[in-house]
Image (cartoon, rainbow, N blue to C red; front, side, top):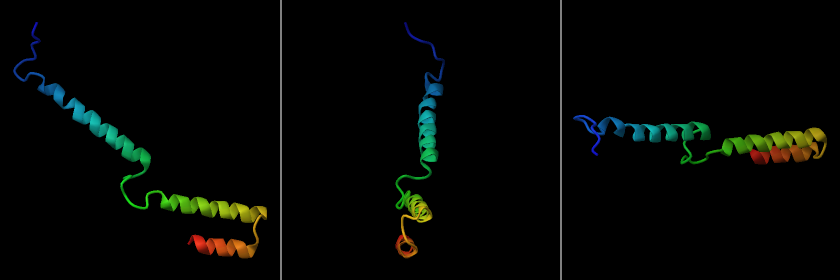
Length: 76
């Protein structure tokens, strides 16, 4: 039995697959926070996390003021 899709055949359905592919790519890019191929991706976040940990260690008294200043200088 042959399906009758009209004069265009299955052409109207062919745009669905590229559209789904495009949506998946866009969702991936927005969830990852940018282009994953770019250099230095995530470097800024790691520096902020290191600085936050340093601040917490200093606030708890685990390191001295001199150590805090030296590590802070090294992170910059």
